[in-house]
Image (cartoon, rainbow, N blue to C red; front, side):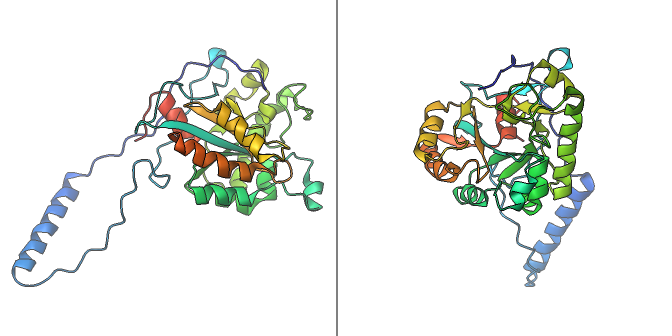
Length: 311
């Protein structure tokens, strides 16, 4: 499907630990508890404290997430590439993990087609993932976020999902990449940065520092060109075949036949270019769960794979 570079040395960037409570706060808590007990002993019921929100399970998408991990730069400072997790490694609870990823593609010159009614979004797919409670990583082009800012913002706000960079223009970063227009090497870094800016303007508050090359096409020159952005390039090891597919069963077979522990699956979030994806997802998810798989976002898979367990 695309050239793959050797996996680089894997180092993890994690968030700092939360500081423990101070001595003063602990004394205050103890004093309040003692006073409440004294009042109760005198026959006076203290005011009921506000009900505490139930604690989120450790693996709940709503649980406070640590800072997204990134890989260390590759040889000669090149952008590192993450393709899939460790094959023999399982998540903290022993399950096999898999990451579903969805490319929200739209080129910079497709605005007129969108104006004529062509749909490059797929809200039904997002609703299906929500109903199935499937975490996912959505790689958005900047142009897609500009066309659908409300959807970009809503996807980012949903704790099930994380939003990553898929370039601004969806032009290829190498020659001969599925017929895509090609971006000049001297403009590659600016294109990645422009995409992050477009995502932020659309309301994406914290895009994760991951980048997916349009078409998955890259070479050493491309990895060098975008190294200064600090992103980790994210590829895949399972091709769903959903691009322009109309047979959901065929897409389902491709995914189920290719998934291994630690897999990254590439799919699409575009109605006009991937019309069978929703139906395929509805078949893929329960089958993989039956096989013992747990769905995670790329950030979680990367953290588990390189040895930095979620905190």
